[in-house]
Image 1 (cartoon, one colour):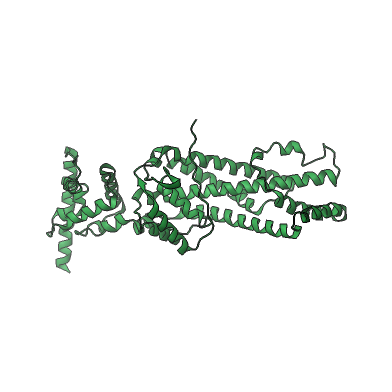
Image 2: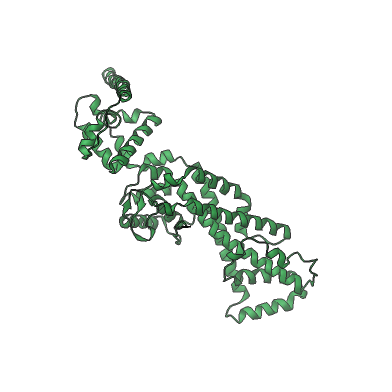
Length: 417
């Protein structure tokens, strides 16, 4: 069975200006194809990531009952698993494989076949330490668009892909939390045997419990810092009784060229970083779900800016649903002709501007939803023109009445002023 490709992008925190430059650079380097590949569909891997997060959640709850200290980053998971779960369910419902494949894909480089908007969202998350704010997000998208234009669908759905990238990062951190908690369990097991001399029936941290953990295979090979930091902590708890063991631990650590004090500092720094990253991730998911993507879309979408230049001055007076209908029609024309939305909209404006009189041909809608669409197809060099249906003719008649009424109102307003 063929498995899906996994998008892997990692990076260190960049300043806003550095990230804007980076996004411009990758936009210049990317070649774009009309569709994404089925094998790059991210939802199955996201579900697997959530399974890991759930298992870590269960482990943390178990360790709380055992009295093992919880990794500070893990506290975010204990308090916010429901946020991640609701997000995963929403994405699974909204992002079908058909919808994903209709996003423009990458045609070159290491991310061939992946949806461009997925790669862009993951790049943003990788270089911001999971931290998303509306103002910065708008700026990042505009930086990318200085070199390549994003489609309406891409901008409208970027929130979904930002959340997928954040969940991926949270899952990776959860693996490290899991590993840290395993080392704590092992340390408690050793102390229980060597210092407390408990019998098998008395032990809280026996090997049989350890073997029940489902993700034991996630343990990383380099685990010594987590183990040393926690072992020194619990040995100090025993005072004189644990002194000889603590001294042996110190000697062993010093043989490697470092000290327990240095190990503790490094481990605490790593713990603090993971706490920030998880906190940023959870907070950003909540922020993304509060964002008004309509406002972001209208601010940064090139098509919207062009439509507002309607020579008849009607587009800006329309309600949201009518504007959305126009944009969706342009998207349909783009899908039909395989020509970019921006180019099509420019040609619509070119046609509308060719009429100086206040006629219906001067309104952009004439070339989007009326018979003027055939003029647009001619200008685009597209052969398969739309044939008029009776339903279309009725709609055009009704729209013509609406348009003439709007023009009459505008003229009367001008006269009466």
